[in-house]
Image 1 (tube, rainbow, N blue to C red):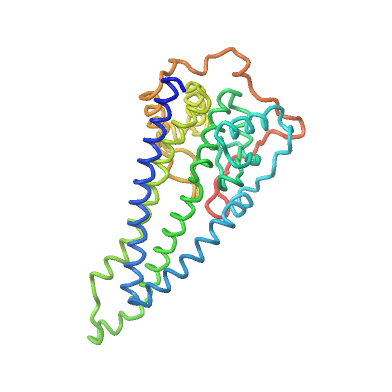
Image 2 (cartoon, rainbow, N blue to C red):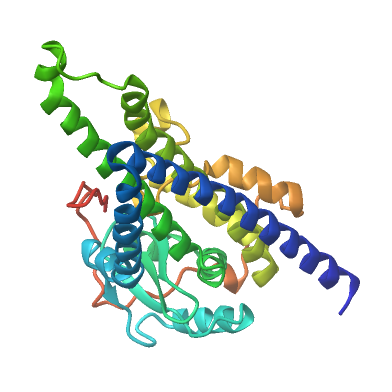
Length: 326
């Protein structure tokens, strides 16, 4: 192993170790909040019920969440060689990343430029929108695919699923506690009940704190996925160019004028990516980036060949059931 490869491996190990401890701290804090709310509502019996219900919800979320997300996005599988060369790219990247199985590709008929992955190391899917496939070059798409494959290899999707479930449980318990408070308000005004204000404050702010902790999880993992994607491809310019295009074409005139830095809305499970400029700045701090990475006349910078039966999507994106936007 040469010096460069050893340095890259050390960098990856450092990123993963830092990522692990940050995630552990966030998890412990989220679990503490949900346990505290349960204890304040029902005492030790509440802790037992919260642990039981939480375990069941986590198992359900891990097993069924990928399928639910695919159905909400109305995604369909991309059959082998339907888009020439695409499946081969995924297979090569998956082999390089040492995944247990090659991810299944899915297509979403949407003009938005988006890509995300669901599943785990042994069974996973990568979802690509029509807008992304028609806009990114082969080189840029390799960077995005490597980014998603890194998420799969690091088991990020399951981690975020668990965090999402914990956050929802906290919100549910807090809402229930607030309803109990409203029911008992008449007795409070009559002087028959003493309201513990510390409990009320905790029930009000616990969901907010948990949501902020949930938002912090994807940020540290996005930076690691970007870095590892470059190690997989050896091409930082391709990923930077893809991120720039996704930011540029993904925002309308209103967003560019008044909401700079805000991308397309995403569901709770997939939200909280760092700003594109922040991700590009992080990549530039670790790798040498060309001034105009998209100005490349090579074959790698040509668009993919989209078959005629896959018609270009004309309808504008809109909100869907479940908070989806496509």
